Length: 315
Image 1 (tube, one colour):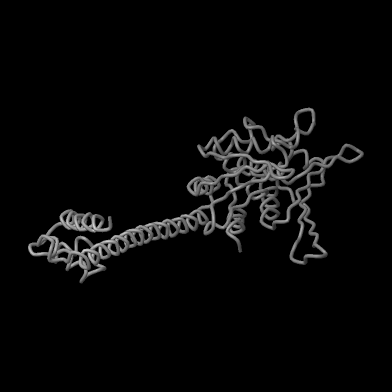
Image 2 (cartoon, rainbow, N blue to C red; image 1 turned 90 degrees about the horizontal axis):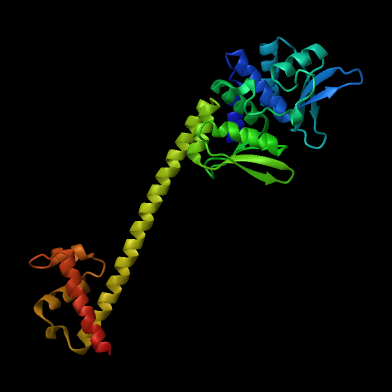
């Protein structure tokens, strides 16, 4: 099971205790994957279509708990892909359909359907913070996904209209999270890229088990990145030390083959011999081998003097 699906599985098993939160979650599901059907006799029915069993199960349960309505479920199996199914949850009874639509504020007092089944940001259904959380939970169940956190951090919810995307974005921003919108083919995607913000979203939607799993992955990734940075830094330092050592030995060999090490001052003779005998030693290690011991800056000064002498001989 993917991480995204496990989040939806967790959310589908979480039922709000308050009826107003159930209504907010129902509103999100209908808004993002539902449609209203009006027949020739002006009778209403509400249909929700989804390929995700988690959405179907949650919506069916919410309608039953909040309105004491038994919705009808039909399952259609893809003839070409046996594992793919489409679930349709329908409330066919006109009176029950109206009850639901009025409760979620998707029809107005004149029995007119609100444009694109949109929930405006100041709608009474999502005035409370807990109801905003429930709405986002329903929205993610209906149209959301999260990338595999081991690879990247990406949270998104796909909307059919810019109006719905802006509404979702506004609700998310009301929690202090920076969400953005991007167009993708004929859809509008509300997305979050920061790992910390995705953790906050899981907390808002009350997916606490998934939140802990994501946090553990983030910790492991951060530890690996820290180790990699240290290894890379140490390798860079080692390469720098080796390169410097090769250059120093070349300089000392040149002096030895031309004017001889005996022509140097005693302090320079001593460091030249020790460097030839210890090509892999660091400046600190070289300094400890001198008598008396010399610090890194002192060793570096002497080696630089040898380099200057060698450069003079080259010219």
